[in-house]
Length: 82
Image (cartoon, rainbow, N blue to C red):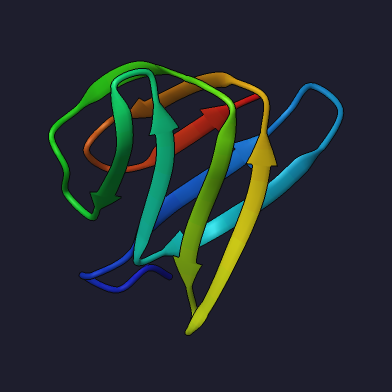
């Protein structure tokens, strides 16, 4: 169960799920620059460019290199589709 300072994050492609769990933050290479999202962020959708998606969860930092994709933040959860 996610605490008040975490939120559900999914990083997935058509063929695999790279991360699916509670995170403290996620940083993505958005079209206009790197964006970092925390719990309860305002909803938005943006395209992603080549770079790294960084997820901070459970005291660990996980980095996923990407070639592009779409990022959706609903305010309650965040999804990266590659």
